[in-house]
Image (cartoon, rainbow, N blue to C red; front, side):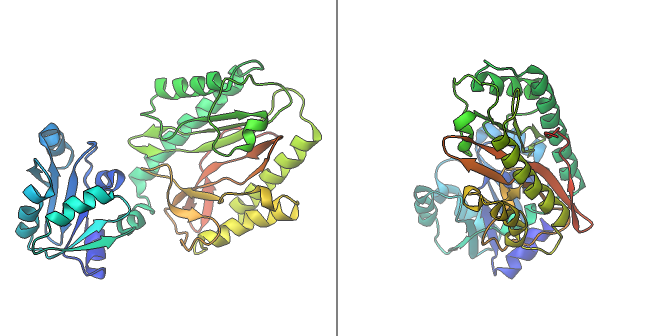
Length: 348
């Protein structure tokens, strides 16, 4: 809250209305699915309807709880006036146009100012507790991958494998999964965000598995590409190229680099191997309360990497009609370098 209040001064805001769920949880500890925070230099209010009052009082002891009903015009002016705020920021990337119209109707004497990324920039650097939660989520997804290596066999469908992974993580302590598990085999693995299908898995083809667990709200993100049975030369060549690109990035990324510079370290390896056009996404992204958050590692990303940031390193090559290879680990920036948290096995 103190860091956010400094940001309010920098942005010449008297207060900010927080609606984005992860930002709301980050600042207050409140995990309800609806509600707003209004934060000023000396005030912190959590506004929620009757469904969440008891939960809010328990989870957000540092906040004044305000029970709301009706639209913004029925309760927001009273709160803002009580905080003596005239310049009110709102999260422009979160509000729908319809909600903004409602907000505008409640603006008597209030200047509404759009903001973007103020709280997300604070979330990008994790504290010790946050890192601990992420490590536990990483351990869960690592264990799930080890389990599936002993379980998967030719003839299983992609959906069956995805369910085995989800069941294992949930039974071993994961909260709701941060994103839908990807199990993509053969030509399907050429789709970076393929959805598991009823396609039976066969030997000798690439199988991309992308999954994450969630602990205390914090996510992990792990991708591995495997092949059942003998691996042909095409698989070996592309796998080795992707692995080389990932290991190069892990070894050479340093604090102070931009997301674009980090991306270039791996992208150059793949380009020299002749598959630059087949690496169509960024190198990685931050991991935390959201499975994708700051920093972003990719072309044109100005985000500066710093100690305490947790992000993925996940180069990939995707060839239509054949398949794809992606290898993804979660890393922690520590003492200026990237330390790998993921321990799941990779192909030798």
